[in-house]
Amino acid sequence: MEIKEYPNEVLAAQPIGYWSGEAYRRVVGRIRADLATEGLTQPHWWILNHVAGSPEEWDRARLMHRLARFDDLDIDFEGVFDDLLDRGWITQAQDGTFIITEAGEAGRTRAADRAHQALAQLHDGIAPHEYVAALNVLRRMIANLGGDADLP
Image (cartoon, rainbow, N blue to C red; front, side):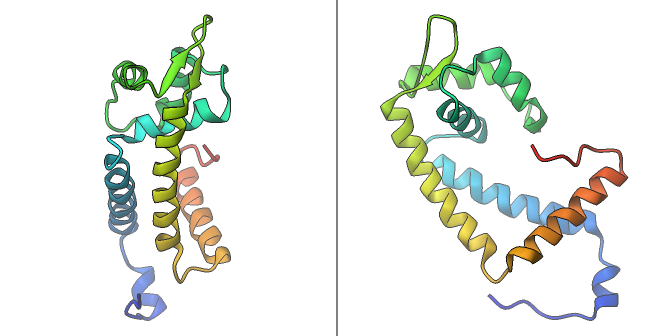
C-alpha cells in the first residue's frame, strides 16, 4: 500500500504520541481480533506461548510475575489460567507447573498462523533495517522518559 510522501521537516514536527498510539491501536487491534477467532485474549496467548516454550517450568506465580509488565488491561490472570485449564488446553503437574495439551497446542498453532499473516502484512514494504531503526527510535524515546527499553 502506498502512503503519501511529505518533506522530512513536516514529518519531524509530527506528534509521536499520536503516531505511536495509532500504531498501537492498529497492531494490537489486529492481534486481538485474530486471537478472538479462537476465543483467546492476549493473556491466553502469552500463557500458552510460555508454557509451550518451557513445559513444567511455569506456575501461576512465576507467569503472573513474568507477564505483569504487559498488563495494561487490569488482567484477571487467575481467570485466564482457569479458563485454559477448563478448556483442557493446559494441565498442571503435581508441583503446580503447567503443561500444554494437544488441544492447547493445536489452538496455539492456529493462532500463531494468524499472527504470522498479520506480521507479514505489518512488514509489507518495510525493509528489516527500517523496522530495526523504528524500534530503536522508540526504545530510545522510552529510555529518555525513564522507561525500560530492554527487550521483553
